[in-house]
Length: 284
Image 1 (tube, rainbow, N blue to C red):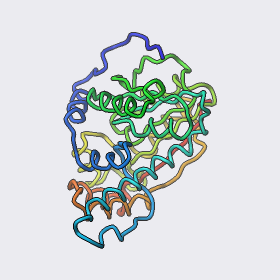
Image 2: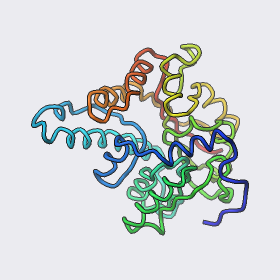
Image 3: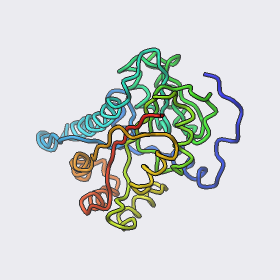
Image 4: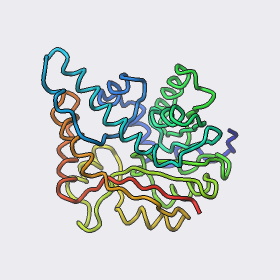
């Protein structure tokens, strides 16, 4: 797909700091899970936990835990895919903030469609493209060192697009304007994201800890709907996944893959200050 010349990919010191973080990130909670089947998700999980993975022989406990966490993260990605339309094999889909490419590869595996992902992390883009080549789908699934706010792709180039836990790194007004530009009329946009609960008030202490940990800025729930409406994205489905994601975090907190941020997520979700939402919207 042809891209037009535009501004440099990184256009602020903040974006450079985020790119630096992900260019050097090699957290086992991302890499070990992806090694299970070659889908590197870089997000969290949903669904009931099989707690038996913590039992049995100690020699194989780590392997059981890795597989279970990966199963829960794949279930989250599958849920996002289920709300994309579904795309036909001749469609193109767009993955904004693609990480190491798991969601784009899953979309191709499920629907046969072509996928383009963008990330401001050059190391993530290179990793994701290697994964696509190793699977023999490099001509169908492509990853680009591009900014999700200014992709350079042609207007109306995609039939579906998504953000999977990447909206908290950008201004939603700019992000949704770009998705609306990229999507055909009637195209589907889906995001899964953590957002702070307006009814609780301002972001809680736990949310501030999450922001500091990931160098991000979690948006309010109301901001998502306000900016979607301003950019011709009309919600057709909103699912509160908060209760469904808490078991994932409870399991992760008890494993060798815990990173230290688990307690903040659990406190935020259980206090009601933080919500985990899936929002599907049509471009009108």
